[in-house]
Length: 442
Image (cartoon, rainbow, N blue to C red; front, side):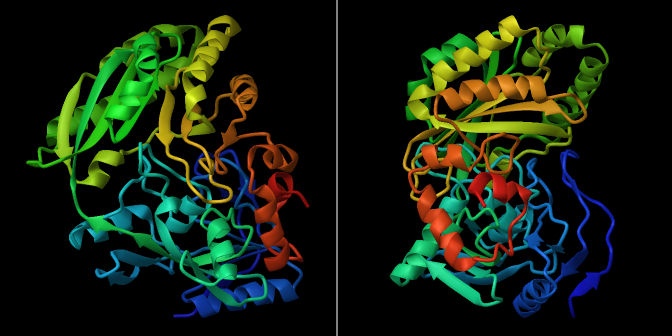
């Protein structure tokens, strides 16, 4: 099957609806060779190149007026190596399909984010993560990468390669699409295991007072705080010997669909129509989800459906600064007159060794703020960002922020290492777009 290249294309939109682009052409390659050809042709035609997955980034990281590469034909598992406990998967494979395929093979990733709609390459290239005391982002579970660079050549790299390959590996696991187009990823996997999830409400002040213990005592701890209330919903996931006790279908429908998506959507509509009702709605929302415990395979515990469309900003702060940062966020909201109907999500990650990982070189906590799609978010996000950056926060590469290369050079010790590698691999900036020009410099 050959790749499809269309002429002038319709407008491309991201999932959040806040980014649009009109590429000169779209290409859907069916093989790595076809992708390499598309890259070479774009260079000959003087066009920039970007690959786009499912558009789950809220930044314009994948937007281009040049050639838009769609990887949906580059999907599936290439190889499972049970001796080394790795799986090699094509870049366009959705995380959902990878999780299902691994489960059928009795395997699992160690950790994952809370949604699985993204492609493996889109999720890892932007630093997508879940929460974990010892287990880190999806990109930190990468053992090898294959990518097409600006001259159309195919490079592979791993932590075990030559010095040059190791340098590429240190950067390309979270490469922002700036070093080349990822075509395949090798992940570490392990035999499938069970997690017991314990979800329960807890007062905001108690979570902050006990945060260090909650983090230390649980493999995966996270919580949601409902602005305008003193309430949170906490979630602790820990490995379990079983037996498997999944959420019943009825309970799952009530909690995950009716309350978390259906009623929540109605609450968002009401809040948009009459903002003054938001604090009252928040009080009800924060009490709607009751405590529950269940045990299941990892992806059924880590991930959940997200049907209410939103726009998001998320910052990584040093873990020791998280409670102070959250108290400042709450104080800002209490005095601001802002009406926020979406919960604030808090997660953690251990330090890793990836050049542009938000957890690079430091133990990290993540604070994510959201607004429902279509509502003006700038006032809230600007005020929140001021707090996050005061703590040397690093924004998620795929979520709304206003930072630039000068800022990143100050908060990422290995920023220069990344940009030097980019100068070598893409000197003519074939993979450049407005977003990369801002965050990496020209």
